[in-house]
Length: 458
Image 1 (cartoon, rainbow, N blue to C red):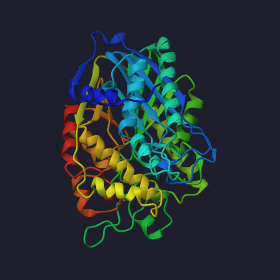
Image 2: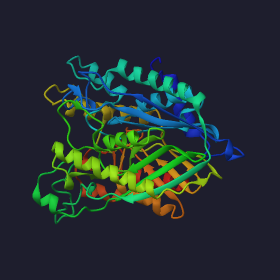
Image 3: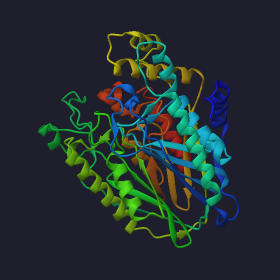
């Protein structure tokens, strides 16, 4: 696939911004068909991991995949895809949606691409790569040739899958509580109401470990699709950062990916897809000391949740459904300026992380200048909603979505377009903390995202 041109980039932006808020299913949902697909997205030895600020690829502990499905019959085709990468930002996210859309015969606003956010994986921003490459001192975010090859493989996987689409007749949803995985990272507030020490993805601080889990969504949710009596796709959703340990160059889909792969072996005829929920402020640190043994334990607990949720599934005939989108153009966090971020990129005394992150902020600033929107989307099937949110949205947005639609089963996937980085709630900004310090959008993003939830769930 050729590189994404500015014309395609802006065309996708306009299409997303002007998309109808609701596309109804075609008459007779019995004519729906589902085409699952999967393809490998494992980076080669030497490729940057987590955007280039941790050790690059040394070897592959387990492979990375992009897994999804094409839904046919509900208007133009709909594509939903989960990717074992840290993040896909801005122009790169448009490129993914455009490539999959063209292969499926649809438009980019009818494609949702969500990352799982493992850290021993690629973190892709094409504009940031161009910016750091211009520094001519070896900084790298992504190998563009590898990125383009992944898009070609994705398009080929969809084209191969379409002729094998199965008649879609039933849908089911279920949930189960996951024990001893998720905990809120922002539980250590000082007397001034500000975040002190943070309990991250891994933690060995006894004081932090002893603190309560804090605000989380403890439920793993599953939405499954059937052709007659056969389950053909199962989508699993759970909100936590998906890292047990990372940073030594060993590529891995980590504990959610390993749980997914174990379930896939047990049910080879059903495509298993895992989505990370709104987990910007949720991680496994309360229960994870960063050891290899902890990865095994966390994998088992997610797997147990998947199995328990599956046990509650009760398929029902599909009677209604459709696709909704909502486009937003947020404002930049005023603490960041283009001049300041470019200066950090150019300062060769900074460590790579303190040059590459600013390059990603410059990319986001340039994106906002073009009025390139962030596209939220939702697939409605009977009383279930598959909700797709951007970046590292706080868990409050996932819980808010459930409150806005009390009569629906809302399964939330975050880590879509990663341009905003963290998306805290408005109330979190005065509390400070790491997430607020790297949030690219202003506090008004809370209002925009909440309005989007209302539009999608109405």
